[in-house]
Image (cartoon, rainbow, N blue to C red):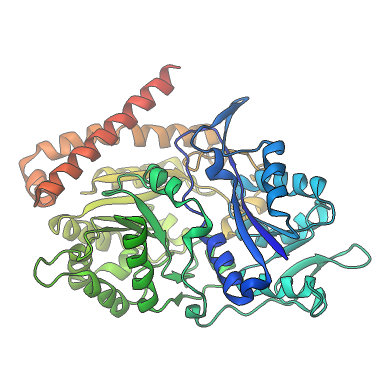
Length: 510
């Protein structure tokens, strides 16, 4: 039996949008190969990596990857698939996944088409109802469910008996089977085998996705799954059921050392939703990498965490010091808002005074500090949004990233926006993650996007004058310059910021 897992191309309006290696698909492929061994042939067809290097313009949007049906058919003909799986994690790229599923079914009517991922999970019934070319949806965690589906297709037991599936019954009605329990021990899953993908491509381009990265090439690693918190704008709690499950650190260390020795990786970006959930675990993680003589990373790599660090978990001097010595060089805090009422609305345990203390400590330890801010929640007023922007500008942060709230499917925010009848009628393909398309009860999307753009564009000049003050320079900037490598990195950050500003000026004038 031949199984092909497809990483779709993406359609974007901004060429700066990029994808990292499809770690979820790699995990699936590795697990299936470990379980079935020579009984199956499994491969990943990475349509994104096949063409992202040379994006093509179609109308007002760019295709990153290959969407050429002839080329797709040529590749699939070589692999002779019996089952084709397509990942659909992000709502914004839902259309591309469906396009591929339709193409596959047209080319190979007898081949089983399977979809999986966060968006496919959360919209499973409607996807199955409206798209006859999708045969199955693997819901939530995929490894064991996909294994059981493969066995059912081979005739070992009825498909209807497989937990965690959405499928069609004999009468063509959509049926969702019982939910599958989450994997209790993630160490039963093998280390993802990057040989399933073109790592040379991702080594070359991953740094374009992870802004202000210190070293390259970069690879991604996930050391845990899930988050126990209930932020109103996040669908993680619905996908992972608010259950935090860490991998054993022994296996994590093996994976990182493999990436360094076999692929020459020099920076690891951690994809965990909550990396520092258990402090003792992070102490152990950091101690493993700290060279006792140099008090720096013994592998010579940098470490970063794309989801950021929750302030209420990081208010610990020992933790911050260990992370810095282990190779973490920037600390991004998902603050989201500077307004007390909005803090209550988003259901996040934020203490703004605690955050300010954390940023001060991190700057003194030599971290580059940044934060995420979200504006445009349904009930926010212009005055409340101003409080958020003012909090950012009055802080000691080095970077501030401003976003307009996005009502993603599967979030409580989506339900609220829908109830208030301010939800757009369709998914906007290729939209930017920074800008919004929905009005709120108090403001239009145009007004929100203008505020976001102004806050973002004014940041660099604001920080320039901030650092000109001797006290700010000595407390916030000078601790970052401890080594020649620190100076080189600082210069690269300056060049990245200037390049971004120049791009924005060209966009404004075009």
